[in-house]
Amino acid sequence: MLALIQTIVLALDLYWWIIIASAIFSWLYAFNVINSRNQFVNTIGNFLFRATEPALRPIRRIMPDLGGIDISPIILLLLLFFVRQLVLTTVAPLLLS
Image (tube, rainbow, N blue to C red):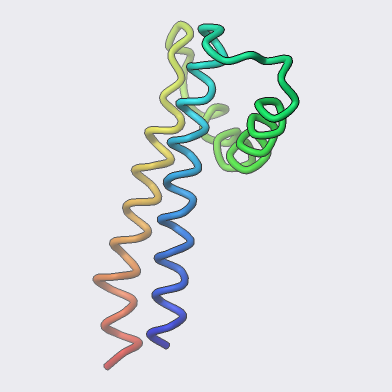
């Protein structure tokens, strides 16, 4: 059971960093810091979009319009933190005892 809990926590941590990378990439793309015509950059952007958009889309639908400011990644990071802490402090002690 410990291996399963550690795997879940690792997956949550990896997704945490993918969300942060996606937010940074979107800023760099919006301000034309990176070359959007580059095949490698386009591949990375496509991967980050496909990995994060299914989780961010429902949050964006619920959130009110904030005038171009997208705080859905922050809300998703808070939810991931909550789930991670729930697994470590509540679920893990119950399964390991």
